[in-house]
Image (tube, rainbow over all chains, first blue to last red; front, side):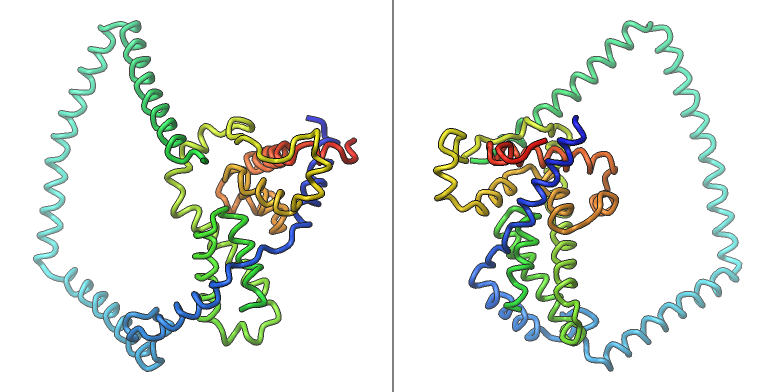
Length: 154
Length: 171
C-alpha cells in the first residue's frame, strides 16, 4: 500500500473524527445517577464497599483480619511441630510412591498405542487427522454462521 | 456532572457503539466519581480523570461482556467481509444531499457501523490520543494487529463515507 496514501488517509480520518462534537447524553442520565447514589447511601454499611464503611468499623475489620492472619500463621507453625503432622507428610509421600506404579502402567499403554499406530501405517493416520480437522472446521463454521445469524444487523 | 456528562457519554458511546451500554458505563463513571468526590472537587484534572475512567470502564465492559461473542468475529474478520449495505448518499447526488444531511451524524453512524475490532482501536487512536503501543497493551493484541485494524477501520470509514473523502485533496 502506498505510504503517501496511508498518510493522507490517516490525516483525513483524523480530521473527520476530531471534528466531531460531543454527543448529547440522554436527558435522564443525571437523575439516573442521582437515584443510584441515593440508593447506595440507603444501603446498610455492611452492604456498601469497604472504603465507604465508617472509619471505626474499617479500623476494627482491618485489625480483625490482621489478627486472623497472624493466628493462622501461628497455628500453621504449631501444627508443623506436631508428630502427627510428620506422620501425615510421610503418608502423603507413600501415596505418591504408589502413583509411580500408575505412571508406569500409563507409560506401557502409550508405548503400546505408539506401536499400534506404527503398524496401522501413515495413510490411515493422515486420514484420521483429516477427518478430525474436517470435524473441527465444520464445528467452527457452524458456530460462525450461528454467530453471524444471531448478531446480523437488521 | 452536567459539565462532563456529554464528554463521558461520548467516550463510552464511541467505544461501545451501543446506547444502553454507554448509559450504564456513564452511570458507573459518575458513581465512581461520587466515591472520590472530595478529591475530584479540588482537582483541576477532573475532566481527564473522568475521561480515563470512562475509557477504561468501556474497555472492561467490552472485555467482560463481549469477549465470548467476539471469538468468531475476530477469527473471521477481514477488511471487507463485514461491510454492511451503505445507507449514505450515492456519489451522484452526494453534493445535494450533503447539504441537507448532518455531516457529523453521518460520520458517527459510519463509526458505529464499523466492526468492534476496527472501531475500538480507531477511536483510541484518533479520539483518545493513544499511541499504537499503548493501544496494543490496552487491548492485549500485537502491535501489528493494531496497525492493521486501524488501517482497515480508516479504509472502511472512507468507503462508508462515500466519495466525500476521495473528492478532496488526495495525493
